[in-house]
Image 1: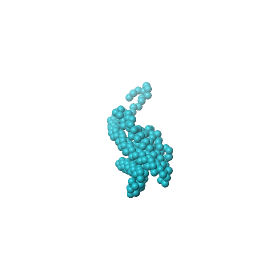
Image 2: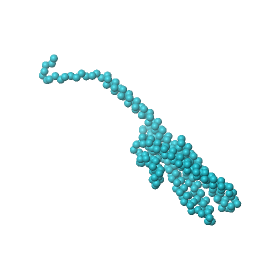
Image 3: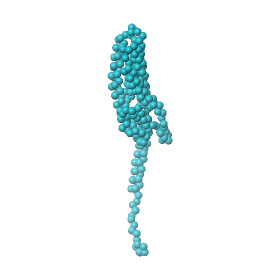
Image 4: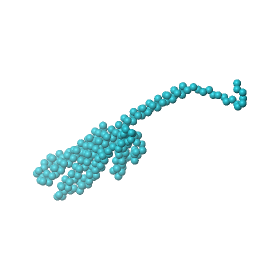
Length: 251
């Protein structure tokens, strides 16, 4: 529930960020057409909204990261029980991969994909199905895309100099790139909710299938033990017989 709630807040915040970026672009467009077309109060309100958005985003991103990794670690533990030899990376990478440069780009994806396949439902013959990984691909591609686009926007804004004529349009282009990054983050948050929901449901289904089988096997083992013990107790004990020497008279 905590993962769902925080990811939903992330999605909402990303949507607000897109709206703020669009608002900024419109105001800057009005400023380019003529200073008299724009009220300075609008810029002050925009600046206040952007500052609030940035402060909330940092705290929310940290909280979401912690809760998501806790959920992910538990999912991995369950997946190892369902398919012990189906994982390319050790369990520790579920945490470490997010903080390791370079491998951050694909290790979490591999970890999630392995858990997804290990948690796949079984058919009537007990064979593991191959569920579509489209939502996992959507989540990871949009999340990585939002990071890349965000870095591009940060680089662009450093090269904007509003004291130079024509740089106002460069600032608008930067804001549009930021809006694209926020839109990707919005899609990534929604896709992450879908991944959490689907993967959790698959593991719950597998647990529901495993528990009755395990209980039945344990019951059969107990019954078999009782039957074996009863059979051993009811069997007559054979008296040992002394072998008489060959050729000796019998009594």
